Image (cartoon, rainbow, N blue to C red; front, side):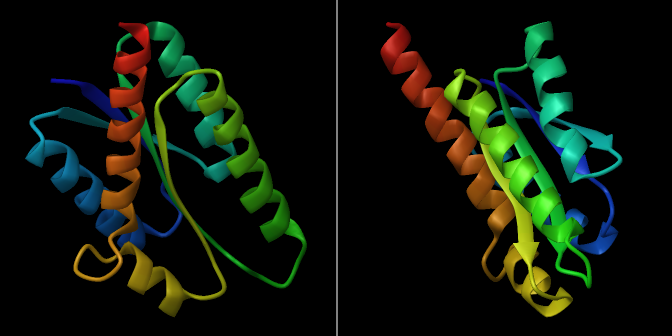
Length: 140
């Protein structure tokens, strides 16, 4: 059994609730323990994961958030930099499933967040578990 930390940027609560439900369902179905940590925004997710990883308390992580394109360049910065930082942590050997949605509108977010539709929270959780499995294979 692994202990997985779900780190969420709780800006769009209803979408996050769906993403977290999907992630928890996927993890708990495999017998893993979950905990949720909330940070202010998507840019803070990689930093929180890095700090939590240093603690050694968690085996893997799921990043959860929703970034919806607005009228300014801010969308590109948040979407790109959060993904880049998560990828850097993953390359450093931290098992992270990236469930940060980067979408054009709320309708797209709903379809992707809903566990009964695209279930991106569940997919992110399964990605984290896949990376954990690879880590144990290569550490053997």
